[in-house]
Length: 323
Image 1 (cartoon, helix red, strand yellow):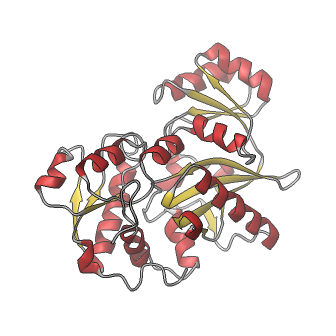
Image 2: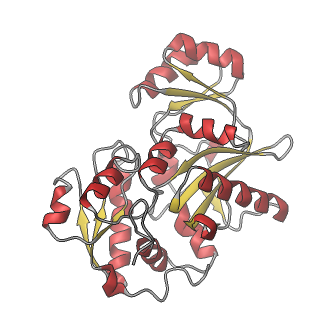
């Protein structure tokens, strides 16, 4: 893995648009990710340029002569298959997963249904459409319970519900971001995340990162705007646990048809050390606080080579990886 992003013909990559910003609730984080990626690619000699789809239409990519895109967009319109579909129509190769895998991975409920069908461990859940259904979910799943939008990331709109009195407010918050709301059984234990790089049989998990947030609250603020969250990589977990997490994450990645790169979040239940998949992110953050670069560094891959290697895997659905 330490050779990832090396021996790449930079000139063959052509003119590259780093897509950042966009119109989702994660715009602020996307701009930070994109700025880092842009600087890294430029430092490697790539003809890379900022492109914000909220400021100009994607058809301008063709007009301005871009050859490929590094997608640093997060959330809706960025990692949900929509921008991927637009780039397919424009015939411009792009980084990360294709249309179907991006769309499925963005929808936590569809993702969990597929993982459960494939025998992968994920916490029990209910899809709800009202505060009353949220209270019924709490009765079925027990407290604490996580209430969150089915199709948003970065812990936006998420509430840890402790009792029935909190259900209405939690549902209303999540429903601000998505019409589909997910109630999920809370797993008490170690919070971890594990990135994957590659495609198909070549996809491999990077080292696991163990996350320790203030009071166990790894929310939007603690993810991106504080220095109080602790990240342990190496994770400090027993080797057998780390290997099992990596095995599960690689299977979860392939099961959804992901490619290029992604990052899966896993809880390890304290009572029996069983891992549970929470979700998979097909366009992970690349900010100074982000975790894919951290795991890559632990594997001997610099931030610059990580960005270049991901870009070199840019492709279109059904085509061989380019260049």
